[in-house]
Image (tube, rainbow, N blue to C red):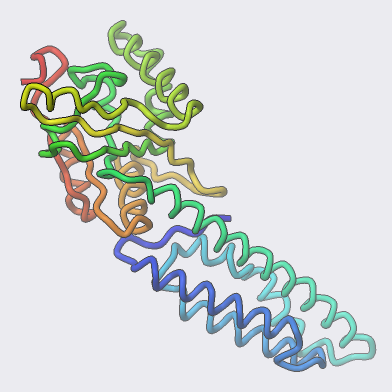
Length: 288
């Protein structure tokens, strides 16, 4: 599984909490809380309570429930008292052993996946999320796109992050009644797929403008951000895109910029703490 820090969460705080709880879990699983069934049950229950306290304000409730296996916790909690009958200790011990082993596996996977997602964001450059309408209506085609003026940049590299919700929305536009929209959607999705498959470089850096006293253009890279396993999307796609961008900003520990033509999307982005660039030009006015 993959845990996503709530917007505004310090990623280092989440990292520390997960590492601490995993170490405590190893201790309980290794008999540090006792070897008798009832002792192990109480140690496990105390660990769950502590984990809930530490993670409650750091990750989403659904992810917290999945990470801690709260249904299994409730089973063990309910079984702790009745299992005092003959053979009950053996059954309770088996139940706890299974649950502790599973929790260790889930925690280790969550920490590993979180680090992999963070590593994905370490790529050099200004982090940018483009609203779906930018892909459809920007003056330049995706393979020619140059966002420096819109972002107020010079030669800095740019790394475009594409939430999967954007890809799906572009796929839906392939059946649009407007033929230009259909064509653009097909071209964009094909280019995104090709760039990701080929390593993520959309445009190479270009230093040739220096020959005439101009400003070089930095590299532009692109990466698709997949939904975490079990992720439930928000019902409004604009909300979903902004939510993913805000989560990426928290994971990256640096600004994520949002480009859009839409007022509603711009307002959503600012409200979520993103740096928003509201574009004024359209595909029909040469970007002026």
